[in-house]
Amino acid sequence: MADNQDQRTQIIGVNHVALEVGDLEEALAFYGRIFSFEPPEREPGMAFIDMGDQFLALSEGTNEAPESTQHFGLVVDDKDAIRAALAEAGVAVSPGRRLNFRDPWGNMIQVVDYRDIQFTKAPEVLRAMRLDGLAKREAALRELAEKGVPPPHPLASLTLRPTPINLAAPDPDPERYFAPADRLLEANPSRRDEVRFMSDGLRLADHIYRPPAAGEADPTAAVVMCGPSSSVKEQTLPHYAERFADAGYAVLTFDSRTYGASEGEPRCYYDPAQIIADYVNAVSYLESRDDIDGGRIAVVGVCMGGGYAISTAARDKRVAAVVSVAGGHDIGGTCHANLGRDGFADFLGQINELVTREYESGETESIPAIAKDLSEGLAFMPNPEAFSYYDRTSRTVAPSWENRVAVKSLPAYFAYNAIADAPLVAPTPLLIVDGTVDLFSLARVRTASV
Image (cartoon, rainbow, N blue to C red; front, side, top):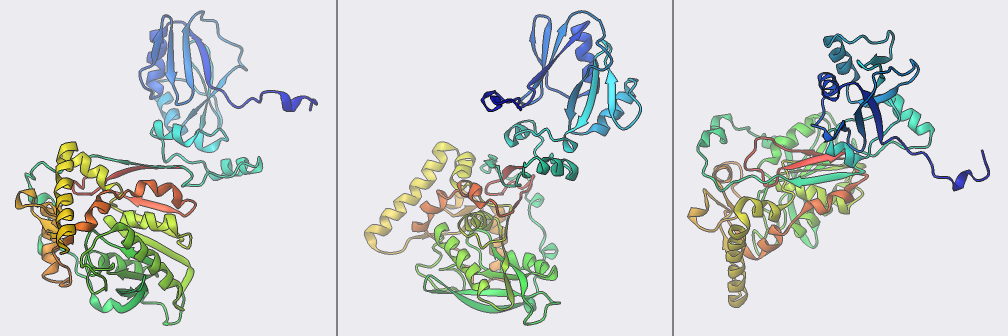
């Protein structure tokens, strides 16, 4: 190596390849039969096929074939699919494992699979190309590791983007969203035991589910669960907890402070910061138990609990894994998108007026937690699905649930945003499960991770 090698600019990669073709339109038609790409940018006599942070340039020129040893490597997401497309187009390929072919102008092209080579796109580029899930295979990862390149952590780059859904439109077909009562899951109360733990001086009411096959003193992995907005531990979570327990996990569910059988005043004070604090203290409680493996505690949240699970894991590196199921991640942003700028401002303005009235009177102001819609007046969850679920379960399995929310807690709730916390979760593994047709999800999100 030359002494001045460290002063030279390094070769980092290839940003484009230019090919000479006989007829530009014929060339685009040919390549369009084999590969999928966006309409190329054009200049007189040239076309540029975009490949994310690279491009393929086609230029009209002579029809002289290059020497047989000249070629370029074209990276694709599915080499086998390209082989099949070439066969269908009647294009001859070289024998053997490699996939080489010539275009009608004699250019030799070698097709390689992204998953099998060292060449690596930046996560942002893969996302822009809609190839979020494209990952290297083991052999390629080993080759990269031999060069001192560590495999990308699945959470090294993560983006959550709120997907606006218009909830203001009337539901033309309620049966589409609500299951008949005889189709609802039924929990088995005998699967759980009542326990208590302290959170910031308040005693919280909890349920612990133990794996049926585990002995009383056998340390097991554990899951702390948090549920939907204003819910108590008997709602929603038992159906998850029983299945986690069957899979070998101990599960802790809890009433957050001021809710259900837990202590705290004023009642039904739904402040995300306080709920997240309870979540963190729930992890501490599990760590203190002899029947729990303190190094294997995960947090799993459903609906609003999904956002709180992300925020908890961002703050607490004792958490071994985190899952958000249909999570509420950007409440203000979602409400702003659903109600519109002026509609959300009017809604929050009514909340602010009640806060002022509480300040002046000293008396706690509350609004209903549920309503069929806003025509019934101000409510925390004014939609028929929430009304159907909470009203039904409060009359059956969850009598401690109350149809009210303390108004003073709501400004903080509507400003809650777990998206800001998401990058801080790394390197803890994070799984986000989100519905594609759930029109009542508080904040459907699109995730991209590498």
